[in-house]
Length: 144
Image: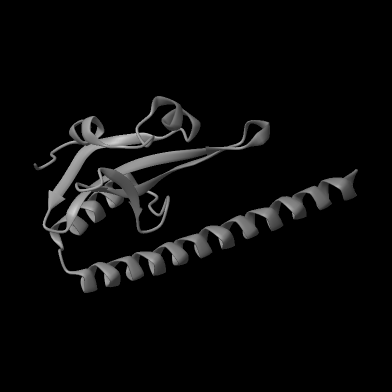
């Protein structure tokens, strides 16, 4: 059976992945598109972190795979490894078309390098912002 959208996967999947309570807890959304090809069946979810004191993180995207034999959903690549929906969907489509385990491993390694580069850029941007805020507060305190 081929899957063309996640509603079809939801009907046959085992476990608690698609439970309303699980989805609500992780503020998870499931993109409707499913990519079913020689490399497997893949789809994209997005999650948003909710911390204490009302903090809400950015919505980030994860590629998931569906195993037809076990009917279980697993994470492919890095959890919340994509900053855009379109980037995650393009990667899921590429993964479904590629049946080679070697190229799949190389693809995951490249994604990990890209994710690490983006996270380092985000960390550097945050550090610059924190330094700027500290400088402004110091000036305001000195002025009095």
